Image 1 (cartoon, rainbow, N blue to C red):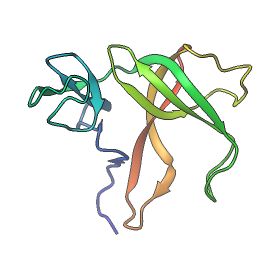
Image 2: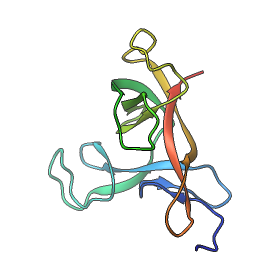
Image 3: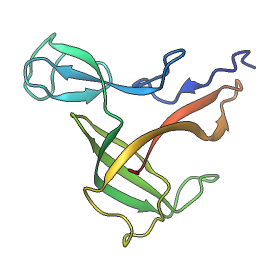
Image 4: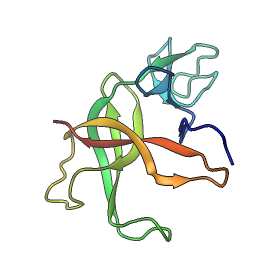
Amino acid sequence: MSESSAPLPVVDWLKLPEGDDPYMEGHKCTECGAIFLGERDNCSSCGSRGMMAATKLSNTGKLYAYSIVHRSFPGIEVPYVSAIVDLDGGGTVKGNLINIDPDPEKIQFDMPVEVVYKDALGRKDRDGNSYISYFFQPAA
């Protein structure tokens, strides 16, 4: 069992700096400006090599696409909204859209959303570690 009480990030591009707010980190090509999640040495957009730099991603964006999921793994509550969001300033991220009814009449493409960071559904791994994840919600 883990002795640490600090939660861990659910993905490696989610950063949890001690004493500061969580954020998502992308890597931006200094040649063409393309932004990607995850570390990389080469740009998949323009092909530049060694021109990638870490960048803090925005906590706001617009809903690009979504799907209402009605069937999932055992223990996962359905329905839920799986979303793809274009972040302000660049970067595209997939995550769950929360705090909205899973009803197509209430979800609009290009609606403004914000990123929220919270417990990853209250689950722990076999070592007792808890995790922080990111979610999207309609912007206030």
